[in-house]
Image (cartoon, rainbow, N blue to C red; front, side, top):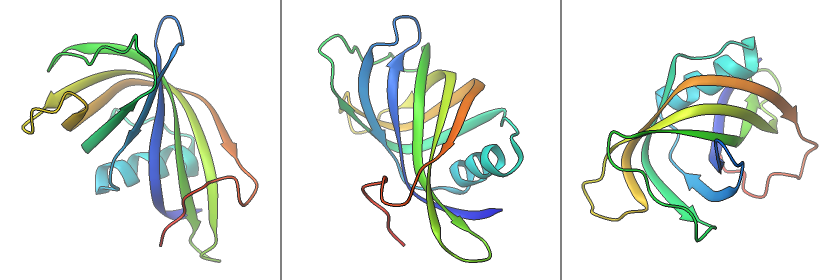
Length: 140
């Protein structure tokens, strides 16, 4: 069983063409941590995951930021380090998902920053436990 996560990010792909759009970074909140632990520990799918203070780093000139409150289909790979509750050792894990994404706010006016993004209609495609050293950033 895992009890904590750190260094989450998600590689985002178009839901129809699977073209790579870029990477989103966000802090660990209770909702994010609870949702990802539910997936990894129990194989359960949360109804929604709410990311806050999201910064998107585009990698495709075809990426167009979604309008606020517009639902878009996406594929993604959530990457994070998960801490074993007994040994306290960190394990990098990739979670492959399909989901609907909806940006809910952008108070800064930056088209690549969102106050919150909600993932719904989540489908878990695969979970991969990676060998140590394959996650480039692990923080305590």
